[in-house]
Length: 515
Image 1 (cartoon, rainbow, N blue to C red):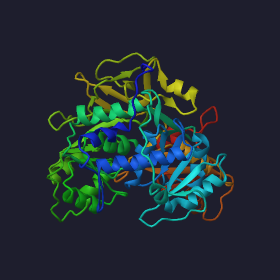
Image 2: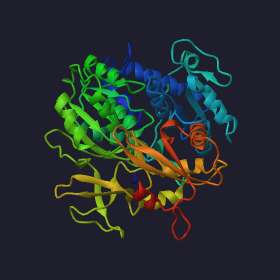
Image 3: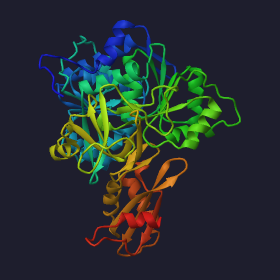
């Protein structure tokens, strides 16, 4: 989508607009901390001032490696306010994984949680770049990092609060890594228009967020669902965001009751754990008006069980990182269609197409394609892969699905090689490449197997040149040293030979049929 060059838009308006309307309204809650919209904006402006005096300029990349604490929105919106590109990364990754991302994104500065100091130092010691580093303390006691700055000390510096950078709608605001293409992740470039419009469309036009609403954000903020739907859309609507740094079913249920949460957004695994937690106690969910789910297919038995126990109907939605992320929702209990991921958002077109890219009639299954304000600008530094997924104005998702006569979307499967474990995308080729780096492994195949709690579990089948004692355990340790924990195989099976096609490639279809 093209915009007039004179038009300015900055996605930091997600907090500047509500701060002007209601500066004393609660914006962020974290344990006993209560941060108003006015205070959140001032702290973000202080981050922007620090970035300016550190030499960070519009378009420079600002990496954020943080859990769900108030530091995240402060730094995220501060980066946007300064005109920089925010790059939230999965803080659970290993130094090897982070090193690749650092080399790819070439950040000007890295904000990292204090507990990650060793991991970040190891990643940067072998990286091709040497960005400025900022250690973010978990409490009010400043720390003195080996390299770089202390977040607390820099935020305490006297400063003049800057004006917001006049970014253009088509300027990149955020890069979120997704889709390990041939074993390597890709950075989806979301523009200021993508981010702001998706937040407004989700919050105001689709789900009718109000200023009195309170949203629980326990999904990690490096995940597009947590970042864009639960945080951006809530704050832009003037609603309060209650942050939890990790999922614990008992804690989540307690917070929902204590904070009178009206909107929850979770992945299916989390709903399963809530359903089975405190089963002998009465749980107060009377405040919940919207229970959103995404990230993976939702089992019908879980939908029904949750509604029966808590009196809350879960509304399924659909999105991708490449679509900022929301594409569709069942937008209310009255309009909910079980098994569907709902209707497209305003300004978003969805169709199922055949192999030639021609639209299919209602009910027929094809590849889901999307066009609208939410579609990314492209992948960072990947013009060929961007051209492959963005064709003739449409994003080709790789997901299989259909639309009914009323336009409701039904997801039927995946064309791309991916599995979803506890709501997190796992790309088998990335794991296979790691396993094939082990000296005993000649080839590896990774597949997903059904799991009642996590949806899918990771199974690795490896072909070896020589069987060593305790090889399965050694391969699991090898994976843990080189992959984030959620990607590591739960089971490793050693075989003499993997099934292969005529061209010599591993036949995963044959493996899946055997399993």
